Length: 486
View 1 (cartoon, rainbow, N blue to C red):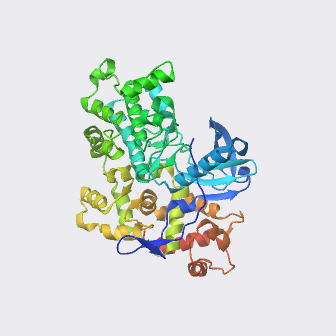
View 2 (cartoon, rainbow, N blue to C red):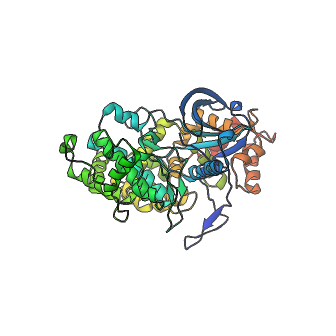
View 3 (tube, rainbow, N blue to C red):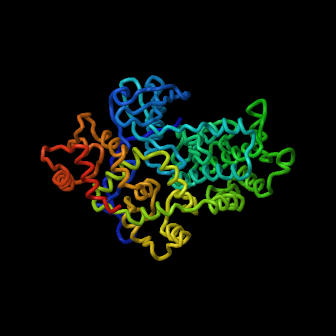
């Protein structure tokens, strides 16, 4: 299972009137709260069982002793990691740290011991897409379109950031849970790469049945992922990959012909639009091959996804939370972002993922003011919803969009969270010493980039018994006072 992160701290910056960023901004994003520590994994986690293994290491199901939350932990023995592999692993960490998308695995922290690296991520319990294909043999067009949409929105987000996955296959696509509407998530960025604009990647890497032909020439770009997604779509609709052979050379020869058979058997009942999309994804000519955005705009995807969205009412309550969200200081916004990104309820988050994707019309993994306006119009809220004010209050990294964690933070029902175990779980993650009290040094370690003057103000307001540390009850009272109107 792919999961990772690092603890690089960036100077907070803000945008000027032309959209560039300058010093002294809020610049809050979920990647800041992915921690890197040294120590023993058993200090904070109980390992329950092995759930997977691969060339780099083993993946375990674990329980966080501090919070009681289920997690997945990828163990990478240092003996198996040479200098090149370590560099790639650190790149995976950096990539997943900056990725903030509902269809991509979420990571929480990295622990380094003398013998191993441990990458802690969310636990995805719904199984692999590959297993589901084997069980079902083939999917309806509606289901295949839904899963393709999940996959390609994740790719579209990555490609905008010039990240190429390079190993997209059904085994690297996991369902978040066993719920029928559980999102499909892309995992394993262990061989992913950043692509310099107007350049090509050289390494021949990936899984044979899903590798685009140009990869073997040693000059390719992000469209190699679209080829892989097209192979997966073909597989979902008929139950087998398009190019099969007894040798690697035979499979590659068939792939280079790019003429998958869609004339016999189950294909007689599959729409021409679905076949058209497959041809445009599995296209040897990379200039003519669809981009991720092209796929999302194709009539087959739009028809099936729009039908699904039309049948699902938009969550009015979450929209109301969005319009009411207020957090005055950088520290308040950081605390709420930390809680939302680290201990969000999986069931509640699933509903918010659905809403986020309903609003994200262009599938770029973030919400623009236009998309927010259209969403409010669909609710009949019209001019009652001030999207400019929403963006001002909720766009904590000030990039002009609502990223997924920003949306999650703003739509959370915080009054309920304060009274529930989620706040206690977050408190325990802050409480590195485990003494039930938060020192200023513990808080500063979890929330980087806050000025001393703001910390001093926080301590003055939250430490009501003036003992120099914050108890859970004081923490709860502080948040209640600050965000009661949310």
